[in-house]
Length: 475
Ligand code: SF4
Image 1: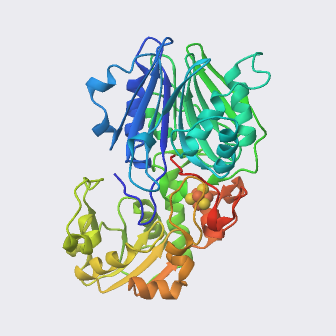
Image 2: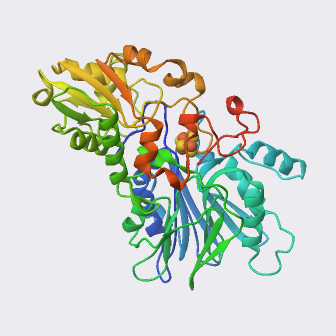
């Protein structure tokens, strides 16, 4: 299980299924299981059997939250689910998703990956219209908007009319799965910030998931990605695609390629692992080092390190061993252990490192809390030199589109230049991949959000970057 880089919690994962003649919640469980890396604070599944809706949510990882006793009662051929990371404050069960309410059209449940940048304004408008809220989350804003009748909804599918209204008003990132009595819907914001993939289930029916790789775990193939500005309606008969609003200039989160997504996920038809190797190769061309061996920070920077080693003509070796079971623990380490920081997660391999000049490749540096201890760890195992190479540009700006990535002040590259960061982490040399190099590796012509590197946000931040108008982002 990969861990977020220091200072960056992961975003959320969503999944949904329509499984005629079978229990959809079971497929969704496995989808969430495959998306565990996108959120480990809470998990939940809501289902519908056409008469009633059922829900179970809990704190912790998917395998901690669900067992046969609580999965069994999630009846029905339709289900959606969510993995959550917490953004601010304590992890609270009331913030776990999906959110479920009863409406005049029957049950409505929503699970969200992303973050609305105009949630506060929408919430204020709803409050003034007499709509109450039970949380401060942007997901509930979307749920309440969907629960409100829309003009002209009597003709056709009323949910699609309401979803169009939602998409006309919401700004920011949202890949949503929505459960109603008759169908599961998958919606993607007009910018396409976060991924969302659909595929046919073995044995009939359809599945949707944040990442294509999770579809296989659900027993589905991968058919297509939901287009920005569109909704896909999945029901017992099949699926229909609805362009609800015009897509905006495309802005897929480039960090999905750098770090977030699983290596076996396909984004825009590109395998994430292959892109990561290209990021490493670009880095090797831009920032070579006189060294004996290339080591990646496991597991998230392994592919980048392989790409670097290949392009540099240097041997790649596992110089750091990661505890696979580190995960989230509710047991806090004592002070001495906390100070040793990365030792909880990584141990160095002296046979690889002793007496060697090492290139240490990481995918990104956010706060800069981990890089220094890692460099020291390599030196403690006898590394003669440590040359730190980062396979993305310096992160200088926070994310307001679904990544809880610290504030400007907490970002080390916002405060220090590269020379000072090198000093801070104690490496013999430090180099980041250039923005142009990153764009070459990801296929830059396709349109990406790269705001955390450039400060150019694809959506308006109502209160400006320093105080973006976002409520608690839950997804
Ligand atoms: S600001 Fe960075 S992390 Fe956030 S959506 Fe844009 S590229 Fe992704």
